[in-house]
Length: 216
Image (cartoon, rainbow, N blue to C red; front, side, top):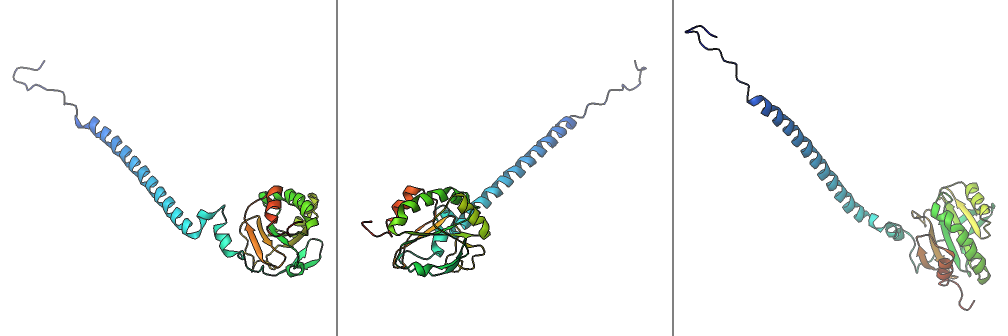
């Protein structure tokens, strides 16, 4: 108890600002983190839109439909560009030497899963269509000749299998970016169809009718 006349000592009041200040600090940090996240998402969305726009102009929206590749390849109705290529058995062949026969050109690689799945289908179609004069020339790209030969042997392929590992023989006239690529050439050497997708036996037989002689 204080003596008479002595000023009364009171406990110092609690700082009413301290708790609120801590709360405000945490709230400020949370808002900052949220703002950073929103900004990051907005930038990602902007980049995605930009990539879609640029990609569409470059032809990416045609992927799966062969948009860009189809524009670079020889066109339907044009003469098929000639080339020399080495077969996996060591012989050299020239596309022009098959003039007078329908030719199914197939650009493939044993490293390509759709091409691998398609090879037995092509062999089955060849067995049916070869008696009608169809020549299948399958040109392997971007792999050693022996690798292509081994895969062809594994599938007991009897049609012509060639190798152009560095695209020296075919790359100038046939810039292939879609695997597999099929180019159908009639007996006069004119391209009648270009297919940029994997085919099964039925589809091969059906499409081959465009270049096979009628009534066979």
